[in-house]
Image (cartoon, rainbow, N blue to C red; front, side, top):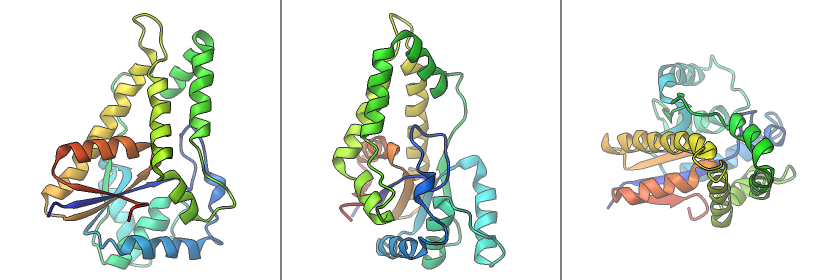
Length: 238
């Protein structure tokens, strides 16, 4: 039997530099019952390793923090790594949390640069990209956390979100590949995340849980499936 990787796409509980922010949808005090329900669900997978959207160069800091939490000397912040994954790790008796992200610059344009260029030179394409990202955003403030996770892990949402990135790749004129200049970084980032997850598999973990921003789901599933080495499990299917 192949090792399993459970992909759980999330929205960010605290502010991040994403196209759409959802920092107002989580209340650290009022939503604790919902967090516990989510942890109950994820614990049924019995993961032997937890992978999170923290850059790998912050691995030591991540686990220093996590161990302080286990020792009762650290107060959890509102982000999903603290609220969900630290608590899940404690429930499972895991000694560490695994950072798998990468955010280094490769000399490419940033997303903001691409957007500003498109506003001036390709306003119709900019409008199309913006609308596609907004339409693929299905988070509702009145939903429970579980309801919102089901929405963003839905197959149609995953497909539409990736199509927005494919539209972004069309930004540019002639040989000025503006959108692709950022997209090459996006693909490199996701390939590095894939590589770091596979390192956990190669280390002997047969059930890895990857808890990551939902925009990564399409590429993560593609790369992991195409490896032929693991079975990919979706959150909604699980």
